[in-house]
Length: 430
Image (tube, rainbow, N blue to C red):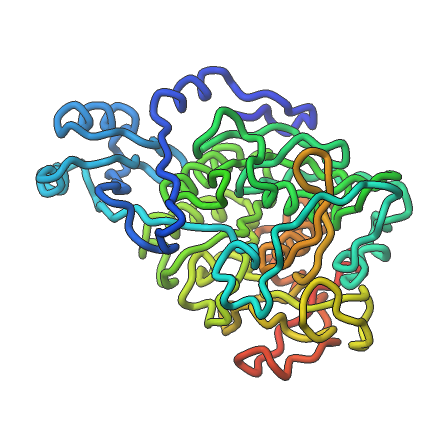
C-alpha cells in the first residue's frame, strides 16, 4: 500500500510486497503469439464477493493442483492460475467461483512494435538521443502546454498529482519524478526493460528544467506499474494485477495511463475480467486514459479502448507543434495536422492528441522519438493530471467531460476512417 495523501509517499508496505512475491508469475507472449490470443491453460478466476481471495486461492491451488499467479483483492475478487488439463470443470463447479475466463496476450501500442503493417513505413528501432538543452516537444506545443497553468517549457512549475503508468515499467531518469511502483510482470523490479513506459512517463510529466524535454504536467509524481515484459508483451492477468494495485491505492493515484491493448469488445462492466477491474478502479476515483490502438481499425474491436468508462485517445500527425497543416514530415510519411495513418478510430474514441514523431524520455537516461497511439494517450493523461491539480474532487467522468469540452476542432479529419471529428486536446485553460 502507498502512504495516504501526505505527498511524501515513497514506500510500499513490506507485507504487500511479500504477499505478492508468493503469488506473482507472468507468461510473456512469444513473438509469434497474436495479441488477444488465449494463453494455453491459463485462466482468470473471479470469486463470490464474500469469499476471501487469498485464502480461497491457496485452498483451490492445493485441491486442484493449480499454478497460482496473481491474487486480486481490490479491483477484482479472484486470482489467476495455470489449470492442469482435466481440472477446469471441477474448478468451475466450486461454489465459491462466479466465473472463469481464459487469460489472453496483450501488447503495447507503439507503432513500430505492434502490427507494423499498419504503420505505412515502420519506424526503425529508435536510438537514444542526447539530452542537451530542454526541448518543448511538438506534441506538448500542439496542445498549448506552454499556455497551461504550468507554462510548460518556461523552466518552472511542478504539478502536485500522482499518475500511474501501467506499462513496461519506468526507468530511473533525471528528467522524471518517479515516486515508486510495483512489478506485475517478469523481472525483479518496476524498472523499464523496453523503453516504452519511460517514453510514456516523459510525455506525461517530464520535469520543467534545463534538460531534455518537458511533459504536459511537469513534475507530476509517476508510479511505475510494470505489467509488460521487455518485449512489450504480457497477459491480461498481469494487466489486472496492475489495475488492482492502482485501485488499492486510489487514495493516492488520481490518473492512470494504459498505452496497451488486445482484441475484444466493450459491453458492460461485467463483460470480462479486465473491464470489471477497470470499472472498479474508475469507481474508486481513478481517471483511466487508454490508447485507441494502431491497426487502422474501429476501436470497438480492441480493449481497453472499447470501454466506455475510460478516455480513449486516437493519434494526430503533427510535425511542427502548430495548427495550420504547414509542417513537413519528419520521422514518418504522414501529412501534418491529419489523422495518423495507423490510428484506430470510431465512436469509442473520446479525444485526439499528437502521436506521431513524439520526443520523450527513454532508458539509460536518453531520449527517443517514436510514434503510436501509445504516444497520444499520455498527452491526455498529462492533461487529466493538470485538471485534477486544480479540481481535486472531480470524478473521472467530470475529467473526461472537461477535456472534451476544452478541445478544439482545428485539424483535418478527411482521412480518419469514420468522418467523425473528435476534439483535439487543448490544455491552454488548465
